[in-house]
Image (cartoon, rainbow, N blue to C red; front, side, top):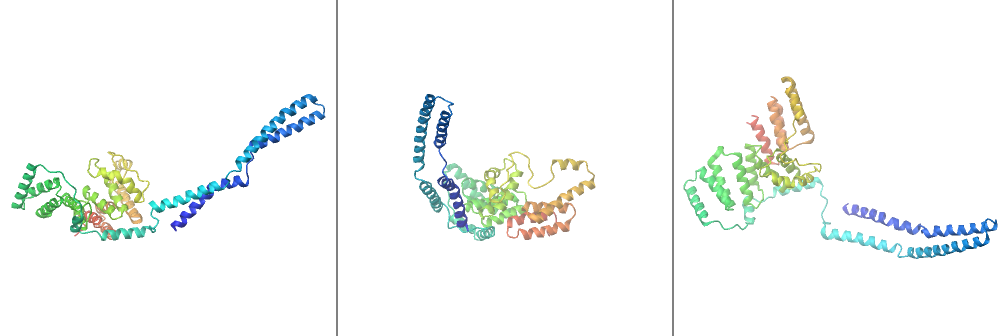
Length: 409
């Protein structure tokens, strides 16, 4: 089908370019000298008629005939020159040029394009993305295959201090502060695997008191150790962070990166667009997102997306505008409740009809619970779990919302 379309478009272009040459050949335009020649000959005949009627003297008629005759000769020479110029290569030259351009275009595509690439409908691309997601290497495999960048030599005194820190942590393995220091300094030295091991031990020591940020830090260290690949083990740490705090920016950034790596720019866009809109502008993930968000939007099927102006206030998710907020201030409690319920119902209808990001589903669950519509919130939660069953990190977001609403047992 692709080649049929290309051939048809090429044929249309060739005909459009070649048609003027063909029309000029079959219906040649008369040069200006031909019109001049006819005018001068008419003038000669008019002078002859005037002489016969006695309007002009014979001497004047002869002088006019000589002058017009000279113009006739000049026009005739110009006409012959134009005719010779018009009898050049004809259709051969444009035909050869068009054939060369067309052949060159196909040869260029064959050289730098991908003519063997099959059609890629959306269903096939999603299936390919799921297969890529399932075929990720394990953390151990990725770490074995990862290239280690060359690092500058550290100061010997600094290395001696770090060695003393390692010894102290080994002597006191449950010292959380020592483990935090070890993670920080192993990271500075570029020892991502050692930092990852220390961070994992820190989380084990903290137990249930470990924060979302600490799980996100472990995920980041695992990704660094794996050469940038987000493995299933690293993804589980991202999901754990989002389960604890659905708004954690670091974890959400890595969630978007995970979807990009596995061929789902549509999912990545919803996460990163929300992060970019929320800010703050000095967050470490804002700059890398801003560099690629418009290209990511195009890949996600959102070509009309416009990135927010840095520093401009923006809401990550749909909500009331300034006018609606101002109007709500003058409402009665009952009217205000009705307005809020209407916005929640609109969000629920849109998610049912068009789908949405995990953040929007989480927002809806929390809003329904606030409105004392617990049964609906629970039903939405179950629907979201079914919708994001193949996306553990997104699932963690909606589960965290349900837990915060007291729906999870």
